[in-house]
Image 1 (cartoon, rainbow, N blue to C red):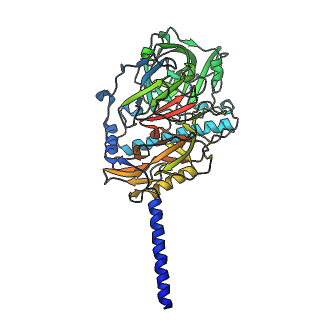
Image 2: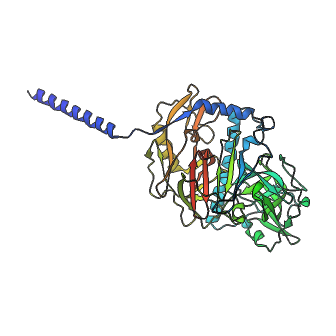
Image 3: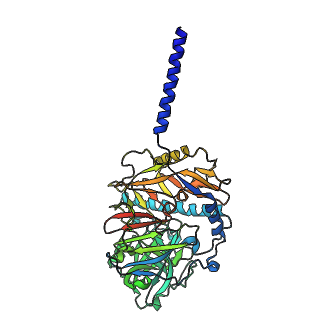
Length: 492
């Protein structure tokens, strides 16, 4: 009899356990997912290796620029924007090597951005650093040249007119730097560019900047020769530009021209700028193009870097109505960078567990998250990255894993698949809005045979960076007048 009662109790226990577990399973939300088109991604890796802009005519040097004078925030204008891969045919014959080169360049840029913050937080000026005389021609400056900690040479390009009469040039677009510059004649040492080198003697509006001018005082690295201001900008991949700091006319097609824009006229230039003539700085400092033209807003949409397509860089057009809006935060230590009010992350629709205020920008200048078009892969503090990765791995038990690649430690072998369903990944911002990423923006191919990796990486720095791989296909708008950042998918 006792045995029978015990058996009944045991049966009831298992029954209640089963019912409790079943109830929990029913009440637990299923992970949200997106479909990754494996086949389309792999086709694109093969396309970029064979794409030749000289043959394909992916874009024309005479491509029209658009102007809209009806904007309530001032004159709105739009200029074409292209990826690095569409400007010059890659010399790589293997996609894996192309990706490795990109990631090496990306790591150099991230190191430069984090060092920039570190110097500012510790109150160290670049003029206090040791001279690096081996980087420069001795005749470039009359005083010792100071080592630059870099901001990166960029991945996207636009076309801008310089001088009067205007000559059109491809320029690197960079939200992580302020100084605009262009290669100039005579060139002591210049890299190859697709356009003729700018001949300032043919421009009626070229004017050297004096050492006493406010423009010269804004430079982080400057020198003086015969009363005229000299500049240097150095980048994390070893690239640099040195020359005269001047004012010149800059034009944007039908929008007319803007006189007196301060920019560097580089006579000694080295680095990985591909075929671009120079750089357009879109940072928040006083020397950036956005600051000098007093833009109330600007936006861009970055096409896939393996695509020959193009999009636009827009000024004074405001935020699209359907934008996911987040606060634009300014640092008191580094005025160049655009910080965003990120509060958290989610994977599969479930929040990634992190301490409250984990991503906040501190008064000291430490911490925070910046939005940067020149950094490729989003960097997260190690604690956040590990939590994101572990959550993603937990929800992908059926995907075959493979070894890591370069800075990626979470990779999958999808060579036998044409498409896969993967958990969603989303950014959550102050104010309550969220941006859910397309699957191809966080699971990317690293070769042409089917190896895909989670496109996030950890950093030991307190600075986190939302990179351009995660921004691709989304119009990113910077409302400078109202301190807001907007993200609008499918507005390219």
